[in-house]
Length: 459
Image (cartoon, rainbow, N blue to C red; front, top):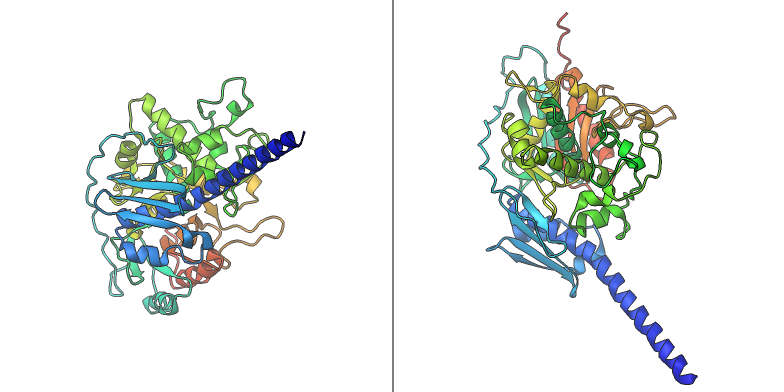
């Protein structure tokens, strides 16, 4: 009997030890994946100095990240990371696709991308420019931007203002230039909506039709979820958007999954489609995964489609859609572009989807994405954020700014503000930690807005 007890206790201890190792390895894998991926992209996509990235990019995120060791392979362009051997992660760079985490040991081969065409440079307007529409107080505008960078506790990295289709102000922090590609984080969601709009224009997608997700069969209640439900974050799919928990859906999706869109595709319904608004990065990656499949049925490649339908026509050659190991674009979080090219995307919406007299987005698409999703209490449109007060006392994100403002927004303060009433675009990139980014940026944007007068009513 004593021997059996000892054997049982030994087995229990062994099981506990195995569980502890697996648990540590799983948690470490998230941190190592994050560090490897960010380092890879900032070095090989953004083109930043490797030592500088390691010194500043992870400060204040988590003490665990400080303990995760990394190896940078400049020759073969990959990063490996681990926590004392636990949670090994590897991110590889490929031309045209940016960096990919090698989850599951296999990365799908993708077509060799066509070389990006050089973008036409936007000309800087000056105080002496012959402006025919909107008037600008340049002294006020320049003071606002200079003040933002003078102390820079908020860690602004770039600010750009465009009015009437011209850049009128542009400034970068030390170490960043007009050629630096900046990470979108969740601004990528608005890029995803843009590609859906391009597919709608071509007749490949009907936003009111059910999204053809392979896992959802006719008798599956998820089969009723439309593209519109997905774009408006009202699919009803269960998803845990909690970055503080290493085991959450969003962390597993971004840093431990080989097929990000499959995480949401395999989730059950928590609510009937169309009834509850819930922000979900999994929804966006499911959209990209499904769009890729829809295009593939027509013999089209997603990246080629994006380049030919949107990026090249607007001259945004720097845009990179990064992918997961299965080859699906991670539209929730991983899009890189220069500040000027982020402005170009905003300008496309300001011009109602037309560029150089060519329609790239459906007529009314700008209104569609900026039309409030009812279940969001006016906070959200279709993968764009809105500047509306809520019905139950919620205050708008940009106090004092016009209600017609809508914007792309990403983690740590990445923004593209579209201001139709001023015919203006404001882009801000940065790394604001320890503060709520929108609270820091909103007064700056409001001050810039005050320096710009509304154009005269054409009537």
